[in-house]
Image 1 (cartoon, one colour):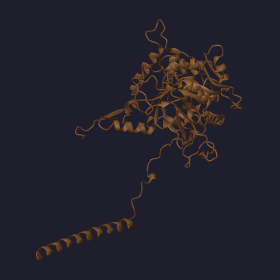
Image 2: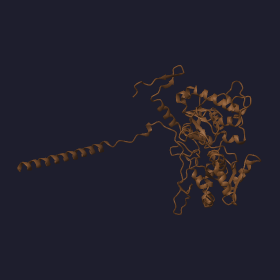
Image 3: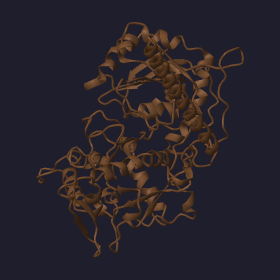
Length: 497
């Protein structure tokens, strides 16, 4: 009995000693940690600087019945609106603002393609072996009509060329560099939309249309360049804003960054929002300068003028025509370019509170940007639409979004539009006037216009492009510049794993 009690006491003593040791260890660890300090977070100053995206204050939004619109704010016990920034929305560190100003311009290497790919399509004839017009003395004009809505390629090329003669290149969003090794991205100056619009028809004496010939020549040229081989084309900018442009070449140039109007006619693996950039159409109607209108003076409630019977996803236009044609304060009519159609459409938009933007053959159309230029609140009925700059711009602050399945229900759309109050409409109308400059194309480019915003969108793709290029070199032969200026291949190790 005495032996059992002695054994039990020994076990208790051992357990007490063990607990005491654990407690002393924990206390000593805490003392060391306190005296030496906790690990500090990574100092971001040691990281390479990057161009930061524009930052906007967003008004909170709500969603109901397929509608997204800005929540009105006032001082009557409701949610307060974030304070507005000064003009330019300058970030605290001054890195970037909505006018597109950045600390360092995006560096672009542009190929000196033969004029047949760009200004030669505008009937410009080079002299003395020149590739580009002298912009100090001549700027070849772009053709009018529907050609203009897809003229993005023209404005971006002009801006790059102008950067070489700029008085203050450091204030530019993008600038041309002559050495591709210094460039963030590679620009391909092919006026593909113009090529489609003017040269896609095959003449009787031609085996192929000029548009097809140019695409084939472009693919052959690009894939032979060292810049393309080093990146697999991932850092190349290819413009294909017209939905039917680059139909033949797009499947071969798909690794590049496409500048598009939408993704309606592209497979997801060829073009998508992560890889590519959506650019606005150039609006056709005149901008509404000195707009003194208001809710009451715009007597037409809802406006649409354009093609009613469309294929593909445009069935909603026909459905809505029959639903709305007898509403007394709704203008829903067929329209075209004939008989001053653009001028009449602009006048109608200026007198309307809301303007319909309905999917047609493709998810997007120029009508949205005509509405913005007219300060007519857009009503977007296009489930697959992608919008320019949507990573920094909240369209629900100045647009109404309605799902197609809801819009074609009897009385749904008209009741929804009638439910929007004067105060709500006025807030969206004011916002339209604030953002309209972001969709303007012009030469020379101005702070915060469409040209600079597209460059800014392209700049946001650079980190992802660099990562893809670096990852692609992990297990494959690396192609690097050689001493003679050419390329040489470094084979991957056989037993890399």
